[in-house]
Image (cartoon, rainbow over all chains, first blue to last red; front, side, top):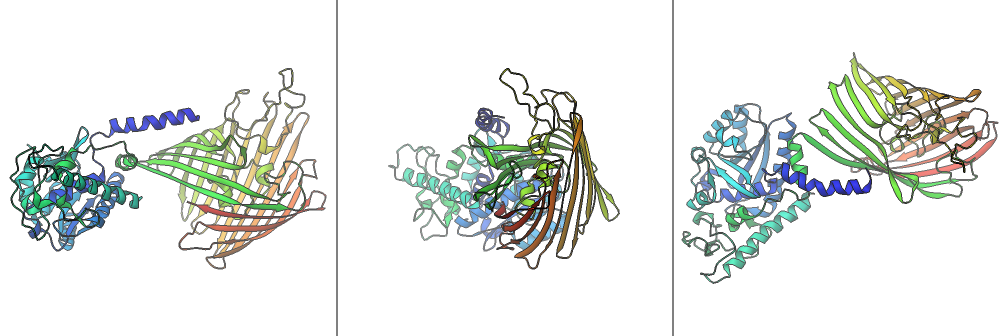
Length: 190
Length: 449
């Protein structure tokens, strides 16, 4: 490859990536939207402890899931350095899903207000949502298919704009009471 | 990276908040570029100001006064002071730098870039015969022995792509970086069988099997056999099958390959025909490599290596290569190599011997070389070493060398920067007739990153 080919490839790469990845929101934007959404939950103060604890759930041995965990934990940690949610600092932790019992123990231990579910859980969301509902932790993902699986919020892209897709019954089952303004801005999943 | 990400993030939050503040500065009925106020009563920070319920009409007021931050949002910004509507109206710019680094891993692409640098100085009291060494040292010179970049990707642990770009000591000033290898590996059957295509380091001996022999070899200069008996940093374009098999507590490894092979460049005379003697063979090994395209002969070269290794550092390998190297394919070149390594606590031993039979018109040249190296890591910061190496180039005692080297590796930060090392050595060399030839010193600062 000569220099001209290399430059052509570099120029073309953003176009390719824009087309190929048009449905996703970068982790830092996801993190900002998730924390901002939390502030609309009128029950957050009762669900969260002195700090707003975000737990990133991933699947061990699943490379895409582990990569997503790394990115989301990094994004939340950066956010935690500069922002608070309703005056509360943000704590971040991660957990590899093995079984519902150990997951619930982790949620309880860190007093998670939010559980971010990474990719890699297609078809196996039921035990996760059972725990998040029992422990009143808001479940969030980056795929709308996870809403159908019982999770509450998905941060997705519509064209070039980010969108908050909301599974309202699921989020209510997880103890959230949304401000009407949030319900106007979010896209309620049917 | 995290710092940059943090700066961008704080900047992003700050920008949106600033936009909110500017919007709020508009007259109450002025049209705002931002969405209607979306801050709920409960979203206000635990501040002294009460927060009336949002009642502003859509598309007229940016945000309720209750949400206005009391100071510019930088550190410790409460997220509730940021307009969610604004966040949702901001484009997701998927083509920004870094987005691919996030998105590709989700598809199982693990991408990396790293490098090595070997920079220092070489000095020698007398000049060697032309071409004996890549860096002569007389007069003494600073040297960029190698500055290499490696870029690659692992795709779901099935496909592996990697390339090395190298800035060599002597390079084309207009294009100082050259590709040393550019290969694609495909896992076919676990670790047992992988296929490799492209340009790859020829698995010959105990050093050329790894990326960047200059960095990995303990001494600042690689042994002379890696120039005159086996080409230095030898890569070829072709196809390879390789793998690794557990054998009890040991591992067996193998590699078989077919490549374009070494080829002696043809000097073209004024009439456009090969210059006299240039097709007869016998060229120096280091000049025969990097034959990326077979333009003269369709014959390919074949080779392989088998090895046996243990977890505790014992290793033995046998390598072989054969193929034509003159443009008419009449003369061939055959290389055999045996390498050994062992580790006993802090003591490391390495040895290698190579034999090249190079056919020429009416006969052949026999080129032999060896090295034996011992090093002892006294402490994490210091490793003295000793090396004996030599070459015998058929019929030219002036080029033959036996060389004794003594040196040390200093690792100044074994915990904080374990890949940073200063390698220094002194060599005394004798020619093929037993006459003392040269004193040579070299020192390199080497680092992998």
